[in-house]
Length: 364
Image (cartoon, rainbow, N blue to C red; front, side):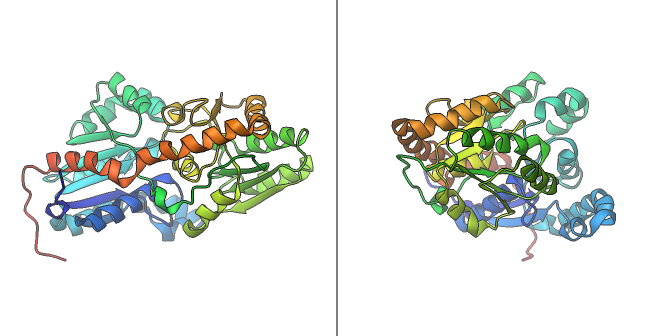
């Protein structure tokens, strides 16, 4: 059954590029797809890029500015949307939920909950989170693991995953692999980039030609450069942040994707790597096992187990038939996250939330 998206006017509230991270990418993709489908879309950016670039003083003012900016954007645009779709996470990332509740009164509210720290956050703040989420018409989680965490606190949710434009990535079926490893995340402690360097060091004792490209910016960039120098590691490229048009090429140039994160939910990088045909070696952090079945869609190891991660990479290099099988399975796995698969689920949520009509102003 076709969906008449033109009946809907939706505000997407969350971070937007140039803010790095999967949530900002997801907000931009959702707004883009909704608009292309014919829906009215208002983008409400929870980030304040100018202050983020203004050094220490700007970062200190950022929290207050974010709240003020969101309230202003919502009140200024509220005549142009019926449904407010908030994208939020834990800790300060929960702030948009509060602002959405305050400024979204009289409109239908939908929440997508991102990030891998929901268990710790709810354990500490469930007394605050639960009553606020019950004021939303729909709460969406990305994975069964996250859904189970919410259910533990009596919060009813629906599982609606992220959208990934798999058509933007060139699928290359890997057979016999070259030892070219790609790591793509923010250079932050929760993603354990030092583990990736240790894995490379161990792989190179067996395969000296192995290389590692680390893509992303973050607080640890200078520290990692010093670490590489101290260990006298060769074959490492600290690429820095990549522009969207560079990402597909970086996936295509690699033969193995390595993920070392300690906290995760539904990382877009693993889906993008799958769409590119890359065999994946990853930790089983958070909800990653909901995305990657060990031995079928990739190879998993416990968080921090660099020995097991190294073993998986060496196994892929030594067993072309395994690499070929994982590469083929990756494409089918990524297809679960296309707009055509996710759109019907979102349509059901939006139309259910908007079934009681909200008058719109005749403003552009």
